[in-house]
Image (tube, rainbow, N blue to C red; front, side):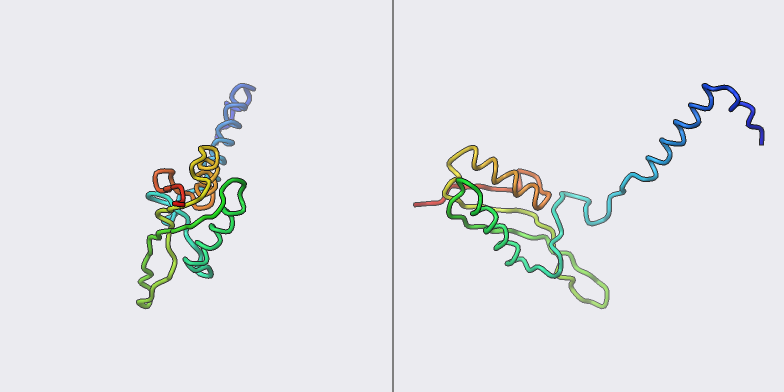
Length: 133
């Protein structure tokens, strides 16, 4: 193999840059089947859907200005066809939050950002409403 083109400094730098780019492309994460589509975080098998709602309720009610809170989470369930069993794992597909502090735009933004961060879902799948008195 003739590598005489590498004797020029400029060509050496080009080859090094191309090699670095190749390594970066190989190290880029690929999307898995679970993360495709509309998003949503898979709830692990050890945590039930009710426990997930309770955890979210605790987190939100601890936030300043939120006050009393009610939470409902909808899940997309995925069937596991292996041996005909259901895996019990689901993606969060929507969240409704009823909170005392939801009338305040700052509080609503904090709630929205927290839910987006926790479940990796889009803002249009989260509904935040003020609690009835």
